[in-house]
Image 1 (cartoon, protein in one colour):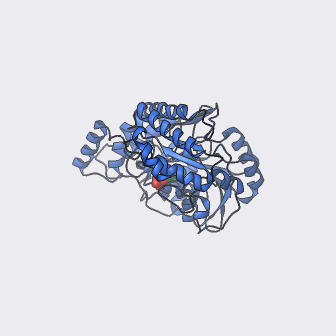
Image 2 (image 1 turned 90 degrees about the horizontal axis):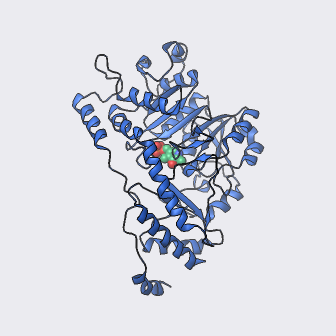
Image 3 (image 1 turned 90 degrees about the vertical axis):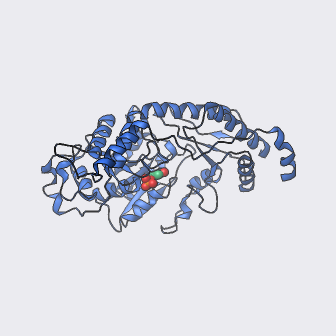
Length: 404
Ligand SMILES: *Cc1c(COP(=O)(O)O)cnc(C)c1O
């Protein structure tokens, strides 16, 4: 087969761009970072007289954009999820519900507080199976819901199930910053929303995380946990000092603060988030259009109520065996299109599936396994042009048709 492919190669266009090249940091953000460096005041609490500091400003900006009462900036998305769970009282031996299709930092955050994930099946739409959630509702009183790859479950029904079963919901919005369900920001349906500002997410500070909540008690707990050294009065997007009165003796200081340098480069990026989301969606729609109507490819439907951010795209190859998927991936790669596969036996790159997390109790998830077996995933960096997207879709289409 490889011989045949080599002969054909001359007629087949190749994509030569990079799937991991992000946009540069905006000049305005670079200038803000340089100003922080010149000041020497990189720690969030190291403030000049009368200054609020870049970190508190970022928290104010994000709270205002999302409509949340409180915001806390932290060191990573994983740290944010751990702090959220701990603030909700999750500890050693507890069980936390979570959807089985997610990335390793999610079960990792549950393990970090000594708790055990209870995995819930996902559907062909890549969102949590709400009937399975309702059936498992008694297995835990916190749900860490991961909006994996930007797919949002029916949040109205999910919140009804959670309310009926007394489950508190933490949303992992690593892939949904700027997305909405029914007009409400992703991360604003549950008790706490967690975001990541790691390089591959929607705003880029290398590493970083953000937390949103309307609950003063949870906000105060998370500020103390994040390592406030009793300087919580310097937080301008946190509850007033009296919310901390009793908690300050109770919450351990588990340092995971954000620093002024990262906050400085994030603020201008936050200001252009809506514009970037529109650009991602244009690219998403271009690839999706190129894959539509191909017999071998099942696109993931996007519900009307979901205003998503297309920073990546997924599709399934329902009739493909593992062997066929492997040869499809190799064919795409030979033409410069780098795809991820959630069905691989071994964890690779950024993909992983529940059977790879051997530190947790093995769980039977036949529906999820069936979905992941042929699930393909591709990032859509903003450095791709719309022509790039059309070419990539063409390559995927041709390789899928060859394999079918
Ligand atoms: C990236 C990511 C996170 C957070 O990751 P950090 O690298 O810790 O910022 C959480 N959930 C998902 C699904 C992610 O992809």
